[in-house]
Amino acid sequence: MGILGYYGSMIILIPAILLTFYAQMRVKTAYSKYSQVRNSVGVTGAQVAESILARNGMANMPINMIQGNLTDNYNPMNKTLNLSAGVYNSPSIAAIGIAAHECGHAIQDYTGYKLLKFRNTIVPVVNLGSTLAWPMIIIGLILGATGLQEFGVILFGLVVVFHLVTLPVEIDASKRGIALLQDYGFIANDTDNQGAKAVLGAAAMTYVAALATAMANLLRMLILTRNSRR
Image (tube, rainbow, N blue to C red):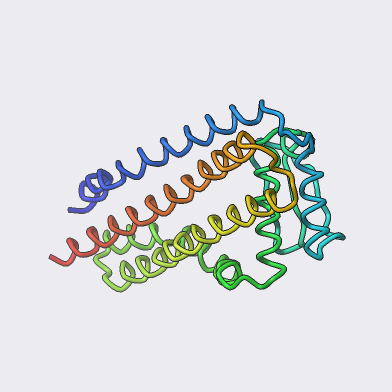
């Protein structure tokens, strides 16, 4: 079976690849549209972030402007909120939605949201698993080393767990973000509300696609290792 089986099993990835393409197009479309629409309050992403953080006990948290497009993130290691220039300085609907989402992560961390804490805890092991899993399985297939194959599968199983946890973490951050925008008066009409939800909903699809890809790869691994024992 060997190499032919390895490449032949890639057909399993096709649905996940198509879903990933769809998710990326959806994000691009939503962001392109609503990054050009000014929010009705006229506030920038940085102003929204500053207000939300201050009202939730994090007034001293640094809000940094970083390079890139859609590179926005909350860093739990150094407790900083990092917004891309297109979000930091922009008064668009997309900008306030993204800024609020990242604030949602900051609040998760500040309040001890358990799923976020668990995700952050397993990151080092997940990074190791994503790097070593396939090499171990391929070497195990070549050498006929069942134990090496099984260990590779276990390592990659942790990657799937990471994505399983990441999805509800991201959805929760978006729900928090939308609620905060509404509660604090940054969403003043239906266009603001629909736009922010469209951008964050599209972003959530990328995490669904990532989970689907991880699960498809795990299925490939299981099929390959099972067939190698025949």
